[in-house]
Length: 313
Length: 313
Image (cartoon, rainbow over all chains, first blue to last red; front, side, top):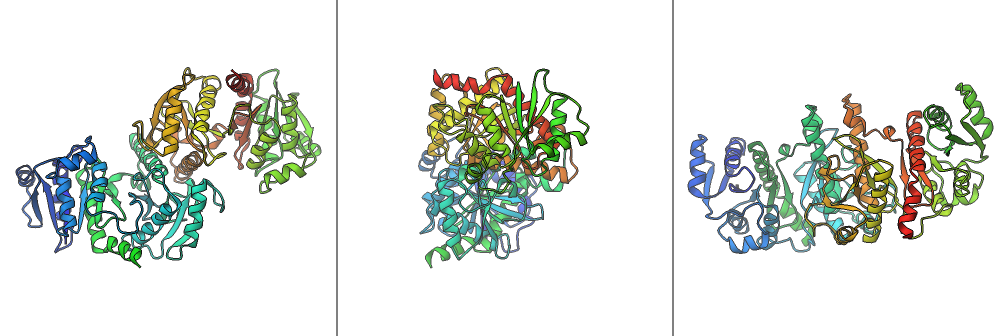
């Protein structure tokens, strides 16, 4: 198995990414290798500088870099030899089983739609994120920002994608799918949410448990939290700020420490023809390591192929 | 000045409410009195039992009680001698300068629309809530649940109502109004949020500072946080759950302790012809005291009359 990693993406690239790649290389399965994409001379000399002597990292040259602030579509069109373009090329040609980057989020999103493309039948691929649970483990919340406005049928698909991801990648048997709402009762919420409720309820391929509220985010009511990208993004950033405030105050706790983005390392784009993980811009070596391990898990559990199979049946 | 308080509303009514009324009676301004509405014999004997000997609480008889689970419209129509109906009657006839209750939220909302009614020009009265700020004090967030779907013009009004409330009741000079969104840049968000942005930007009566994100809830970017009731409700309940989790873990901190609903005691309904505060169902005596003091502040700063004046100009 080969995991492609963008060495040039992220606020602390390439140094933090190369360090993270070396950490990951020590933990990935035998038979898995890392394809580290970036300016070959820079990346190779960093690998040397950091004392890497293994044989499971291969450097793939990419002469260009898409910067964090660049316009996604324009950058992808103009920089065809950028690390993101090369990474998606490898994924599309199945020379990589997964691609991850802590670089320009917009370029990663647009790139996935341009190259591997959405799975046939998937209306709007979401970005997912992980929610630590008080009882241990993680739930998955989607969308967290790719699609601000979502139609009911799009929210239903988020439920299905999240269900499959939670079942195979998070290894939760029959994951509980909840719809984020302002009250528990059926009939609550916006007109879109009310319609999404009916669609999820009628979908017999997933385990819909009904509405959940803001207070249920961290409890065991739902393993899969369905919401539009506007709402999910606000929840995610609010949770991150709670972690930052606690951290700043010197308050440490095993549960709240899991709010740290480093713990899971990245957010997968679901519903495209390939395993893609986007890392946080400020990704540290530890975060990069976890992003790679998550990508490996997605590839080994064949999660995108499962999405595809579900929507082709 | 007279503040009407529903003695029968709330999970721990009438005991907790009467206790709270006695606490409030010790702190309200000279010249302010409390109208404690409920079953006269019950309320009077509780006042006696709890040792109240002052002269600033008057018991107003109401023979009926709207229970927490009752259907709001039906209950209000049938129970015209309930404490909520009597309270709104006093407010409408200007025999009370404010009315507060920790009872059936739906009945309080519907009651406000039936009795004192929305201020002319106000499309959808919101419920507001208070957000503790890291730098001290509170901001105000609205709507937190009265209106799940909100049109851009409704969100603009929330900004205006919040601006006036923050300026006069919270005494923040020229409060900063922020629109809750998934990114800072103009043009981000749902189509409704994008349109609301333009309306708020064009409104010269308030101090619009643009979009804020989930991570900005507790910092000093905005004093007034504008969002629809679906989003605000999720944020509010998530914040409450964070407080509960910290509390359960025995983690106490002056900032996070302000997440406790008791600290402000209640949520005002804004944009109706009168000062109305809704308390949390589980209101304790301390919460009731703060709810009364908040109602007094709203009345003394003439906040609803200011709303009315703004929208009649």
